[in-house]
Length: 169
Image (cartoon, rainbow, N blue to C red):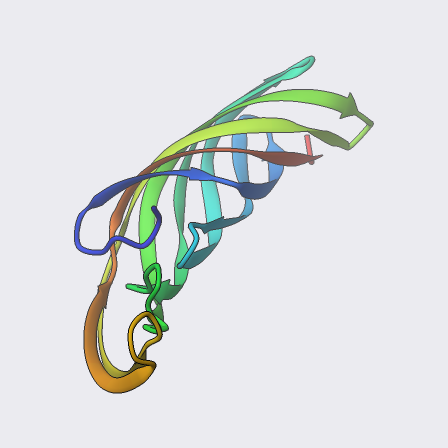
């Protein structure tokens, strides 16, 4: 699950990509990640800064991580017309990356990386809304429902994704 709010969640990212710029052992870059369960969706955009080591085919980095989490469908459920809530909140955290580099050119490299990270949303959003629920199982009637959801969480997560390195050394 991705968007369980107000508590610690563990997630496995399904799609990530990371671009790092290397200058000596300093690494800075950008990352993007998408996660979804069947009812909610999260998109992450992040800036990265930290230290790393890149030798032959291996990449290792310890990076600070900050950016925004954009959530949609928080609180939507199975067999429900509840559309869920959405919002964007800033976050901060740290990550460790271990990667294998398949191709290394003069100034660039491409590989695959596994990242382990922890981050927390720096604020939360409380959404209240109404929607129409249809009772399709028994009598096809409809009624108005009210929902309140809070967006914001702390994550412990792992991801596998593409790694692009731009070497300025």
